[in-house]
Amino acid sequence: MRAACFLLLAALLLTAPVAAQSAITFPQGVASGDVTDSQAMIWARTSVPAFARIEYGTSQALGTVWPSAGRAAEDTDLTAKIDLGNLRPATRYFYRVVAEQGDQRGASLVGSFVTAPPAGDAADVTFAWSADTSERFKPFTIYDAIRSQQPQFFLFLGDTLYADVDCDARTLAAYRSCSQHNREDEAFQRFARSTSISAIWDDHEVANNFDRTHDRLPLGRRAFLEYWPIRTVEGEPGRMYRSFRWGRALEIFILDARQYRSPPFQRDDAEKTLLGAAQKQWLLRGLEASTAAFKVIASSVPLKYHGADSWEGYTTERNEVIDFITKRNIHRVVFLTADVHYAAVLRYKEGFVEAIVGPMGMLISSRRNVAGEPETEFSFNSSFTFGVVRVSGTALVIEIYDVNNRLLHRTIVDP
Image 1 (cartoon, rainbow, N blue to C red):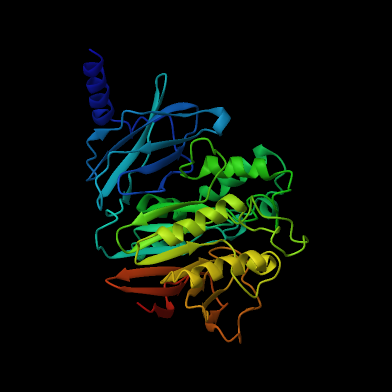
Image 2: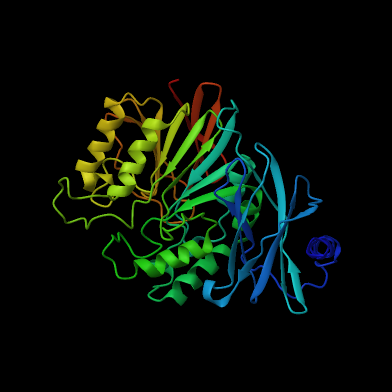
């Protein structure tokens, strides 16, 4: 009987003419994120409290209703996240979110994402990354340029909003309101419907250059986790550092460079940390164990030449990580970073490449700190920028583009 009821509900959801008579809307659109070879987090925010379900399939006809519902409630600012599972690897899926409350109903526009290939499969991959979007610079037209590159996923490396600058946020309500305003951007919503996004925060989600001692850290973190499709770890609801595999080619390590960091004025010795002890050991163990052809470390802040708020202010720990990579002969390590509002590529003597991009929508730096440094291959500060990584066979290529989709620089990471 229960199975028959569920089939009836599924049929109603898939056949009812929701678009024309929708009372429930999705003012910030929908998004997918933290995609693996079998799972994807789906995010939505509704206009009123509602139950949310996902219709999905391998074409825009959809055809399947995921049995687990999410609740867009007041205590999550009407956001809902649903972990969609049992997916096929290396497959493009389409989805929409259907919301119901009493006699009110509505459906989102259709989005899509691509699942990862199995870890043992050789598969080409293209993905993009960037950071830094202030509400004052809407519309974020750069998202249309990124979308045209057809990335299989996007790494959003922090400053996803400027809560301290645009909103002077000091309460949970203010952090949420700032998130709403940024996510109303139509170019962003088009982009979020086209690919999955794996996001991490930096400082402006809370306050400029904040560290673990900041009293509003829990408020900014709560709003950030409510507004992004991040899969948290059971028993560690505030943890955001994570990794995922993309076939034989890639393993991505996304670092949280904020909530565990020591204050910048602390003496730079073994006690001072950017990552915290648990995250640092997770990273080192993961790098050593990875069988991926390329190990990509996604850090919201750069490695060198950028002062106390970057890894430069935590040189003891930075050098420990670099020494571990070199002494354990971990090859093909690439650092992707952001935060400093200009683009650059550096090749370090230790054998790895760092590529910096951004902003996507914020003031562009008048200075390029790495210009003239011996490791610097390229630097640029005349436009908003984003990066694209292409892996094919045994080669990894990094490309940097401006807001008009003009290629600025290409570099090949030695196989």
